[in-house]
Image (cartoon, rainbow, N blue to C red; front, side):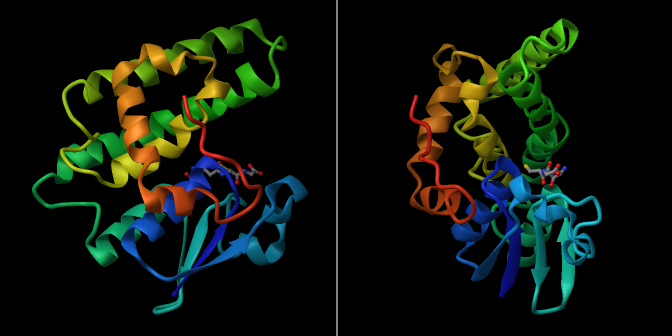
Amino acid sequence: MIDLYTWSTPNGRKISILLEEMNVPYKVININIKNNEQFSKEFSLISPSNKIPAIVDNENGKSIFESGAIMLYLAIKYNKFISENDYWEIMKWFFFQISQVGPFLGQAHQYLYYNPGKSKYAEEKSKNYVKLVYETLDNRLSKSIYLGNKYSIADIATWPWIARYEMHKVDIKKYNNVLRWYKLISKKPKVIKGYNVSGIHQDIPQP
Ligand SMILES: N[C@@H](CCC(=O)N[C@@H](CS)C(=O)NCC(=O)O)C(=O)O
């Protein structure tokens, strides 16, 4: 059994969707980041940077923080959504999510959605990064159904971020391939289930 410390955010949803897709039993422990529960002493023993998500694997007592490390841990342990044939294709797109999609789109939430008008420079930079992310994904998805050659941790890591497209101030319909891929993944029953396991219930946005 995996204990999943999470909340209703893109990084949290990556893990609950992966656990659902893998059919691995897990228990949700809500860490309400709006109430600063991530800063409790108890939680910082599991997640030293005080961010969700984090897991504890009760089979061996291991605790893991950072969504990328958690996804790799689960994919390797259960040998699912990662494949030897397609390993490096998956890794490229998985690490693109971890290093660019998450940080750039996360900044867009702050500069373009929650705090517009505070810094022209930050908004301009952020718009360019959002464009880079959407164009890069769209280009890849014009050549492939999924980010790797098959449905993998790369898609599961990226999709919950694109589900916040309204906050990115882009017209997702202009990115035909991202839109096709987004809709394809939105219909997966385990994705629908894993989207709302914690925090505030939100419907999956339907462009
Ligand atoms: N690089 C981390 C980022 C985690 C992260 O930013 N978590 C956010 C929610 S998506 C959080 O816990 N925010 C609360 C805070 O920053 O105080 C990961 O991928 O796990």
